[in-house]
Image (cartoon, rainbow, N blue to C red; front, side, top):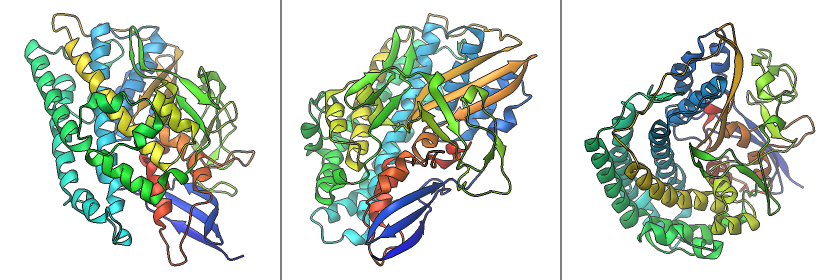
Length: 477
C-alpha cells in the first residue's frame, strides 16, 4: 500500500481561507481534516454592546450573505422582545433575502463551480470546448451574462434596503423604507427581465418546466441551457458517484412570513422527516482551537486557544444535532420541503451532482416565489413599527442563507449583550471531528475521492469541496 499526506488549498474563489489535509492510500483519500485557519472574533466583539448594534455589526461578517446575517440578527432580537415583524415588513425582508440567495446560487454555478470544467485537464472531452466558451473565468459568455443579470436584479435590494451589501433596513419590527407603487412596478419589471435571462440562458425553457419535474431522473436528464450542459458533464465525469455526505439533511425553514415559512423546517434522514429541535444543538470544541466545554449555543462562549493545542486542528467548532453531523444547503432545503425530484436525489445519496442540482432547482422555485411576493406588496400599508427590547432576556434567530441553516443566539443583561453565538452553514458543513471522532460532512464526503499520483490539488477533491460552496469568513465569524 502506498500512502502519503497532502495539504490542499485554497479552494474559494472569493477568499481562500480553507485548508484540507488529506491522507491518501493507494490513490484514494482515506481520511480528510478540514481546517478553517482564520479566526475573526465577531462573537467576542458583540459582548457589552447595545443589542441593536447586532444589526450593524453581524452583517459585516460576510459581504456575500450579509442580508442573511441581518435577517438572523433581527429575528433573534424579535424573539428577545417576543414580537414579529409587521406582515408587509416581513414580506419586504424575504424579498431582499430571496434576491441575495438567488444571486448566490447563480454566482456559485457560473463563477465558482463550473469554471473548473474549463480546465485544460479536461481537454478532449466531448463537452470541453463548450465549457471553455461558457465558463472560462472572466471571459466565458455564461460568466459575463451571469454578472450582468446579477447586477440588474440586485437593484431590487437597493429599492427596498437602500444598498447591498450591509443594509441596515431590516429591523425587528419590519423594514425602514416603505416601497412606492412605482417601486413595485420597477421590481416586477426587473424580475421579468431576470426570468428572461434564466429561461433563455440557464434553463433554456420556462422555469416552471424545471421546477415541476417530479423525479430525480428527469431533473438529471435535463438537456437544455447551461443547466443541461452541467448535467451532461456531471454524467460524463460521474459526479453522482463522488462526495457522499452524511445523508442527514437539516433546514431551519426559509423565508418566514405570517402564514409560515416558504420552505419547510425540519430534518430528513432515512426517508423520514422530523422537526428541528434546536435545543438539541451542541457545539463540540474537542478539535477546535477553543477553550471551553461542549454546550448549546445559548450557553456557548468563544475563547480562542492561542497556543493551538492538539488534537485540535481548526478554528471551526463542530456543531451537532442530537450528536449527529448535518448537511445543510439548497439540496437540504428542497429535500426537507418535500420536492419529489429532490427526494429522489436524497434517496440515491448526497453527492456532488445532487448538491448542484438542488441549487438549480431552488433558483427556479425562488424566482417564482419572488414574483408572487413582489405582486403582494402593499405600498399603502405600514412596513415597520417600534419594538422596544427588554433589559434582560434571550433570543434565537433562525434563517436559511444560500449555503444553509444560519442561527444567531443572543442573551442580554442590564441592556447589554452578555452572550452572542452564531452557527453558520459552513460551520455545519466544514466542521472538524467531534469528541467521538466523527468527521464533519465535507470530511466524510472526501473519503474515497480519487487522487492522481502527480496531483497536488486533485480535481475530484475540488469538485467535492466546491459542491458544498464553502464560505470560510462565515465559518468562524
